[in-house]
Image (cartoon, rainbow, N blue to C red; front, side, top):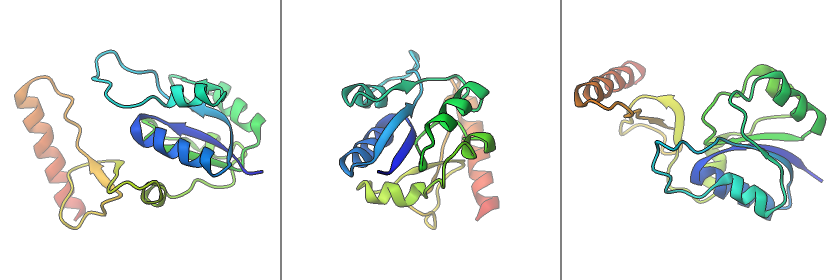
Length: 161
């Protein structure tokens, strides 16, 4: 039986976790984030889906610390999946027994999404891959800072194009 540890958050994480479970993939552990009280939580919960399926879920502040790496290594997964997880999975965690990390853009397509935002920041152009759209980061409170971030993101996109 194929086993996978799922690092996931948000609606993307919920939908992709459900697809894995529907396909019969054994998920011995879900790694997710605690909801931020300062955010408008309008999306479904990965932790709730894990609970509904009797899957242990953890919410480490930093998944790359030794405790999480050792937990993952001890489960000997065939795969690690990262769906809208907000932190980078470091080399030690990747090496902790997983055979490969699948292409998230392909997984988003298979889950039925029309587009997906990547962890790369910037602004999308007409030539952007719909399943690897750079994310715009508008968390600034003041309008001038929000505008400055938009300009920086546009400048970065122009440099990458």
